[in-house]
Amino acid sequence: MDTDKVSAFMGGIWDDDIIPALTNYIRIPNKSPAFDPDWQAHGHMDRAVALFEGWAREKLKALPGSKLEVVRLKGRTPLILIEVPGSAPGNVLMYGHLDKQPEMKGWAEGTGPWTPVLKDNKLYGRGGADDGYAMFASIAALLALKQQNIAHARIVLVIEASEESGSPDLPFYIDHLSKRIGTPNLVVCLDSGCGNYDQLWLTTSLRGMVIGNLTVRVLNEGVHSGDASGIVPSSFRIARQLLSRIEDETTGELKLKPLFVKVPAERVAQANATAKILKNEVWNKMPFPRDVRPMAKTNPELILNRTWRPQLAITAVDGYPLPEQGGNVLLPYTTLKLSLRLPPTCDGETARKAVKAALEKNPPQGAQVTFDAPRGENGWNAPKLAPWLEKALNKASKAAFGKPVAFMGEGGSIPFMAMLGKKFPNTQFVVTGVLGPHSNAHGPNEFLHIPAARKVSASIASILADHALQG
Image 1 (cartoon, helix red, strand yellow):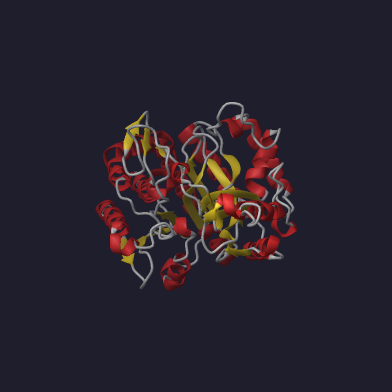
Image 2 (cartoon, one colour; image 1 turned 90 degrees about the horizontal axis):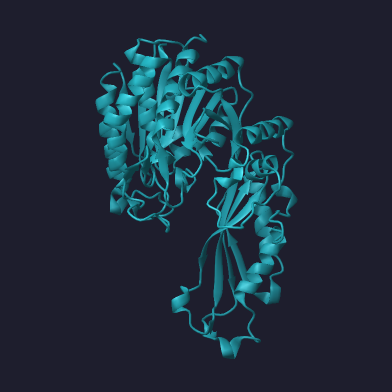
């Protein structure tokens, strides 16, 4: 494969076709169903699907025999299924999603979640990097191979629309389409992160999660704080007590044994290697205010905290007015949305039950306490790399970026990977992405790093070409 031709091809298709399409996509507020329960009535998801479908149908004309179908199961978000025949043995499953996280506050002046802004080779706006670019990058890789008449295996590309809600609809589609998908011997997922924008990063693990609402109720209605304080316990104080059952508030370490696993020696070694590559970028990529310090003293420990140790974040609060609207009232309840990230090999359901039991048992002062978490999601630990794939990854990274591939676990979750890992235990995985330093997926000022995205596209083309040679 002529890597210079691939690079030139990627520059052209990204500038002329992909960036304009992603710009239009960012304008669509197609929030995932967990954040927009009325998504069907609003129609934004259908608009995004139509945009993706129209772009893909036009490009697939250059790949004879390709098929595209928008599959719709009743009551579920739609799914785009693309099948591209191959001239080499094997079956490759490629994955992405097009649903988005909610808006968030804090966007820089002139930008916003639905306001695409192209600046300094970065496309700002919600969803471009997480994960709208995946379908476009995948098809671009196939077109780059076609330009040079390089063989690839059969490709099945799945673009779902419920990932940001935990992929509740995807298992139904995978069962429904199982015969058409077949048994992949390679999975390519472009919904992950990168430690920097200087090389290809292979994701070695993903954390599981338990997300739920902790509610503490002490009154049926709010009461004047001068009348009630000293008689009625504060729901916030009780919630704080309950959180101390599962988390050490001094160190941030979680306390429940079912949430911990033994970290594999290979992952510890990779954390040390990654720390040498990234140095203080491990933590200074975060938008810390002055004098705020990270939670551990060494970079390898911070990496392991982020990838193989359970952590708790409070992501939302209910029961409280904004400060300017807060009267002298002892409030009737506190609801905290808890986001617990679990180690990759921790059983999500066991963790959920342990957290629920710890929070709900023997509530202080008889307060009404519930922890509503519908399910625990398992994480994913990548299987050992086949020798051919390890060589292919290094070759692809050196050709596209000029540096070898690097390995890193991710702190986030992609529920589909756990599902696929269980369903296809002998499959090889290439999980990578462009969510690098400051790209801020889910938060304000999310951006797609366009030069890195072009190079990831080129890397995938190279890996698919090498996969075809395996017979």
